[in-house]
Length: 143
Ligand SMILES: Nc1ncnc2c1ncn2[C@@H]1O[C@H](COP(=O)(O)OP(=O)(O)OP(=O)(O)O)[C@@H](O)[C@H]1O
Ligand SMILES: Cc1ncsc1CCO
Image 1 (cartoon, rainbow, N blue to C red):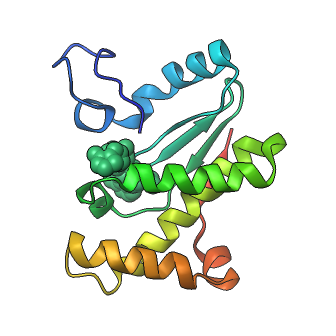
Image 2: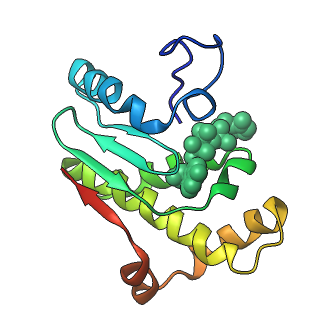
């Protein structure tokens, strides 16, 4: 989601998910959040959300999301909608949106045959998601 190409010693234009595990970006994300006053989210196998002080971890999602172009943009739109409901709880809203997008990908993956069908099933899962499924599947921790 955020580009960290100059953060390491390898190539100049590779994103965080191709060069580093997203855990390597936590300190950079905290620093960016402190400097900007923004909530910063780093997406990957584990998503990290920070306001520069607290760090929340979201474990939901499936690796095949990486094969769907614009999955990052899609979850960013969902984050925006969640934050708009209550901007004073932007960390919780961002983590919730990432978790729910991840849950939808997990239930979609149950029937997917590849990235093409997962893309469709992910949208269907988001549309049909119910409270019991969300509460049963959400995996969020915080420090
Ligand atoms: N290995 C993984 N396992 C589980 N979920 C993942 C994995 N990689 C990414 N995700 C999830 O996929 C979604 C998109 O994250 P990703 O890091 O792929 O974004 P992106 O690289 O900005 O995507 P794009 O450029 O295609 O828009 C997030 O919800 C993230 O949690
Ligand atoms: C690569 C790409 N294609 C459509 S939007 C976008 C950027 C992040 O999703």
